[in-house]
Image (cartoon, rainbow, N blue to C red; front, top):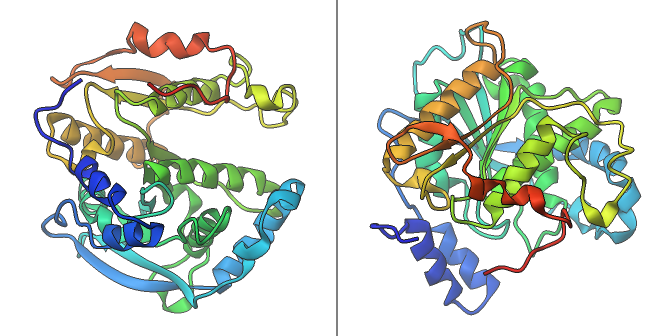
Length: 340
């Protein structure tokens, strides 16, 4: 498949791969700005205090206890005084006075080891404007200097910050049904991981958010197939098999409640296509805004059933194509497949 315009993230990744060390790749990525901030949107930087990391650690210690023998405890050692973060919003949009304070916790992409919150200013500012929401973006700790679950630790700390902000934060504790977690690429995976961590922390009193958005993969990527399977299994957990490497344990899990899922594939779109002004980019943003309105119950409408759609280059919707359904014939779920 060929694209008429080279995707900007593809070009920067080629440049980064030519560098010699991880540190050089990271430094190069930190200054990368693929697209400008949307007009009329302001960005205010601040720092989330480490007390929220300490609170998040209590939850993660309980959730990850069965795996502590394989985890490096260094993630618990804090080497800075907080999480560098930023608010992205349209000024004077009435958010502070609104009944539904739509808030997006956005986790940036970059393979978990490069890019920063600033890299995604064009996407987060677009979300703030189109979804009429306030967007919190954080610089979570990057690998390989910070191993799992450092990034998840920071993401959970940011979520706790929204639920119980300090007195000088400028807003009251948010209703959890006003919060949507979102991310692209690795940030999409981290968003789903955060959602699972919140789910597993229910016994400790941690409430769940309104919804999760993952901008996972392009139409021609192998990751697309995993996303297709994940979406269907989340909506019908008893119908689709769990990972082969842990056969039986997932089927015995108490978490068998179906999740309402909206899944969409955009024809011929590359990874993180929201950076580029394609026809499908606007459609994607509009669909994200509608999803946020639904899950936050902005219009007090009943929630539609799970859906799986293919959107072509003209913006027309249809069911998934036969090539998208080959994933359902996989025998070994969760086992890496050979990459072509």
